Amino acid sequence: MRKVILLSIMAIFILGSMTVMGGNMKIFQWTPSASPAAWTEITNDVLADATGSDAWGFTMQAFPTNGFEYDNKTWIALDELTQLGRVTWNLHVSQWVYVRIGYTDFNMHVDMPGIYTVDDLQFQIISNGGVYVHFASGGDLLNSDNGATIPTYLSYQSDQDTNPDAPWTGTWTRITDIPDENNAFILAGDNECGSLDTTYYIWFGFDVGATTCKGDYMTYVDTFIQPAP
Image (tube, rainbow, N blue to C red):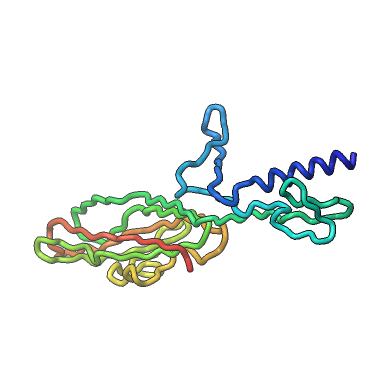
């Protein structure tokens, strides 16, 4: 039995000494949607890749006490516990993000003065790391024909069942006060591992006065995201 084990180890050493020193390796992803489900090789190295390096064998080591040369290879007489080369797996996981915005275009009209709000806009964000969200706005609703404006506000909450606060109090922010994209306006949290799965409910409000000019008004909000440092 000892002889069989020794021969098996010899075979491993021979194969090890023949292994390529480094290079690309195949990497596979489990695809449950395939019929039947199967491992699928990933050929786009932007999505995932793998390389191997440093093939190991006794020809790369020195054994001055119990080693012997045969067939241009260094062998050892295996009569004690001997540590072979350590094999390590190193993996870098990128940060990814899923974002869903409920609407990207609102079309509204009002026939009389008053304070109005629109049913909430859902903003969902999921990531395996912290994400900072920045906003930049176009300011108050603007009539580009005559330059007239309407005071405009935003409010956001994390509870779907909560109506917005009374007009322009609490969580309401004048849209002209929203920081631009160079200033952090953090909605999504710090760099906490695997903790980010949040939906915010954003309300849009505006105050149409009795003397507000008739016509078409427009404003916008641009959204920027970045990984938390």
